[in-house]
Length: 264
Image 1: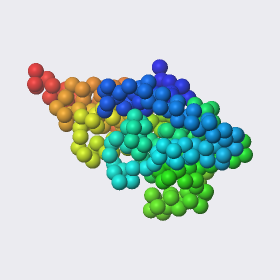
Image 2: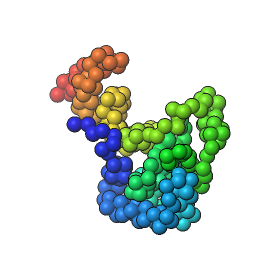
Image 3: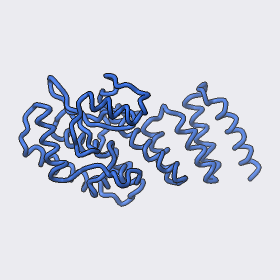
Image 4: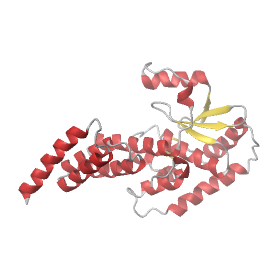
């Protein structure tokens, strides 16, 4: 049964995903590190106002522990794995946002991710207002003008800021976006085994997105694993028998099965 996004713990899910790259990863150790960061923020005694909570989190996460963007090597895959972000205190916007979100969750503060196109922010709410934070650039706070400028920069002026861009992301969306970053990196590197691993995770995180099954079938075929390619095309057809790509999937499946019979 597919879990609701609210039932998925972001820190545990992200650390389990990291086990693909770091099989011996000690998840409990990194959960304790997040606990300790939350305890340090709690010691600031910030109160309920969003701006005060922002200052408390910034004082600990940036000023004391130096979590900031890896601007020298943005496309290093390590930047997308929560354990390595906690080790190195460097990451990309979404992985740094995970640290802020999980510290906030431990304190029962409303801290969320904001999935701007091309960039990822943190949002801290109170009853009257919210504060937007860019964890990649020295945890600076942003006003709406800053967000418009940021969005113009990453979109080339093709996207205008609207209220929907500032809505909090749910856990499933955060995980999907992090995995999409890794998918693009491993695709650019033509690293097919690691790309297959990321696609399998995307299929698990977003089971209704059958395009990931199509991509996974293609990668397995390129790796010479025709049986796995057939299995993923069959699963695609079971999940979406009348979808946009179903006709092509059926054709490919027939061809692959014929190739298997020829081998046997």
